[in-house]
Amino acid sequence: MNKFAPEYSKKERINFLLKYVLWALPLYIVTDFWFFDWLSEFSRNSNCYYLWGITGSHLVFYSLFVGIPLSLFIIILALEGPRSIKVMKLGQNPLPNEKVFKKTKYKYCARAKIQPISAIVIAISLLIFSVWGYMQAYEITQNIQPCSQQLTSAS
Image (cartoon, rainbow, N blue to C red; front, side, top):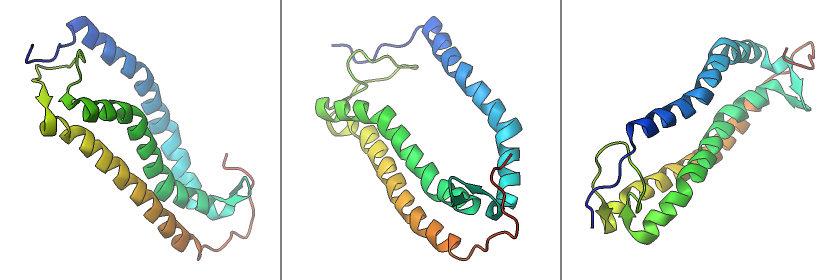
């Protein structure tokens, strides 16, 4: 039995990198040059906006305190969940025939389960933080006074 997991070839590494850069770069450009400016302006006057019958202030606070941690929880669960379950069942990390980027020895039993347990702990922590964030957002938004003028969109 081989002690090391198979590695990606140079061509596979480049393809992997390009695949993620092709979606990450446009996302970075949009967020850096448009979204953060828009969010900053929206946040300054968020109590004046009503979107879908909800005040902008509520949207900002619930998005920050609940939406972001809950989104990260879902992403970690979707990306690491199935792999973590397989590692826990097999007791081997990396999984058989799973390719890696650098020379990596197989780990077995308890040592193999450290990474999936860490992913589970992080995911559960984000879920708990999201519940805590809900309570904090509720507290914060109770004292927000409505704006004298009502706007319908944040454009």
